[in-house]
Length: 488
Ligand SMILES: Nc1ncnc2c1ncn2[C@@H]1O[C@H](COP(=O)(O)OP(=O)(O)OP(=O)(O)O)[C@@H](O)[C@H]1O
Ligand SMILES: [Mg+2]
Image (spheres, rainbow, N blue to C red):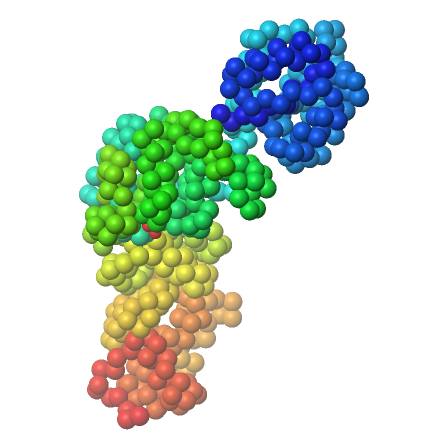
């Protein structure tokens, strides 16, 4: 399958005919030529996967053609067919970029072996080229969570992975459907074969068909070269159709055929491609509703939904939040070069009281932003979460939360700290230093405590305007205890 079009360059009519019929019998598209000029013309006109080239030809040497081809980005694998006795030349030609050589006379079996090697090599190159654009950082694909829901999910994955059946993973956005799909693949017998993902929501409507099934050169405007579709790349492996519900009804019909028959045609081609692919699909839509609204074909749904997996929203497995948050904290601290030592209790309480409409993805984003927002060597605090005012735990002057004001050593009442010693430490982590923002906050709150809540007096001491003080207190979510609040 990876090799389809072959050029045979051989001036001996008998050998050429033999090769042609052998290759045609094996269902390859064969173009036979007798000169280098004709071969070059043929290679310029279409994209070929393999060139079988004789060495001595009427208009030059096959080796020279091989050398010239090396400068081209689109070039076929080249197998040099050399006469008996010139093995050294054959080895040399491998150095010049040949994929392999055949010493004449060769048998059909010898040719078969070379073809098989070329097929395997081409498939690998194609898959690697595709994978080069995607990342495969294992850590990122680990499913984290110890809740009962996650335990059940892991059990399901274990069971489903072994069967070769089609899987439909449903769940809200950000719950980890893609991770589940990768886990199914990683535990399946197909793990050694390609895992190819198509994000159906990200591919423009007019290109999705070509993305799935590929196209021939010239099949439509801008189709300058032949291109394999993702189903071909995934042959023998697994394809993940992410956000399958975003595919148009027309393309759904074609997908149904691949699922039923495991075959399709490239756009602009009449040749039917057979593939052996395991399909995993995901959706964050309610499929019953989509079917009712005639946006999704019921027959395709049933075909996909052979094994359904539901991933529960994060709010229904809140026990997972601490472990997830800690994992993300460590990961992003490392990634952004921050020495964030932990998550404060106040911060964790806030994380536990959030509803997480964006599920794990939202939690991940919140923690990454918090890690970036907090300066070196601190704990993540509520203020770093960026939840807005609502997110800050309502502070009072008598609060005992980690953000509570602490008594500030005033110049008159405490010994001056050594110039090299940091003045403030985070209350939770002896080794963690507080951020400037945090020091300011604690200092303001401590001054207010000192003035017994008198804001005018506090503003005077701090040498800031009463408006600035008010804005800062609003930012902290500070609620005065009423007692000695000064009129504003
Ligand atoms: N259990 C988990 N453990 C670790 N990371 C997770 C977990 N669940 C989700 N994530 C992370 O959250 C992010 C979103 O996950 P994923 O892309 O799998 O969600 P999804 O359900 O496919 O979302 P969407 O429907 O929006 O495509 C990813 O970065 C993923 O690594
Ligand atoms: Mg997804």
